[in-house]
Length: 242
Image (cartoon, rainbow, N blue to C red; front, side, top):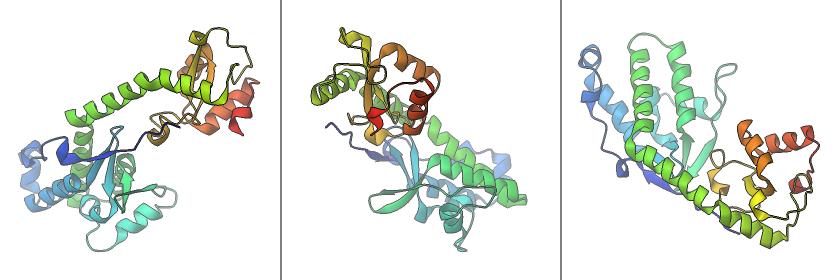
């Protein structure tokens, strides 16, 4: 079985540190420059970038970013959320430390911005804007693009390996005899963008007709549950899910 090692990179290995000059001087004049620098430094030093380009932020370093100080509120926001406003964050362990994804951080910042006012709200807005800069950093964009290219380059290998390993002779959805292997594709069950850790796992995929794979792509299907419901709605086989 081929498995992709989920790799993470320190943000400072992919780009230069944030500089305060990227924030407008008018904004700096209204706020404490030290606090702005603390936000930028905390975000920069506690961020790792997954091989698929998604940022992950260390929980222990997040207080300065979301402006909770020494209150410990950040742990409740992360691990419990806010009823009716913010779901709890999914936590990933990286090098033995809890991290949350960039989208989870953005959700927390959005929730805090919606419920705060004055300078605190401005600091939170700066933190959110700095996070968005991470996504636009060339090194981060390049990492994501190279990852997707790597997976696409390996897709034909995944098809051959799954067919050989499980002796597949028919489309796994329709039961159509495979008389030409160019008519079928390896289709991920959990998509690459949804679950990069299983991108090269042949058990995380099916061999199906190319036309079906194209239709699933058009419908934006990314998860096991969505693939299963797609099969049920089209009266396709679901033995692959057992």
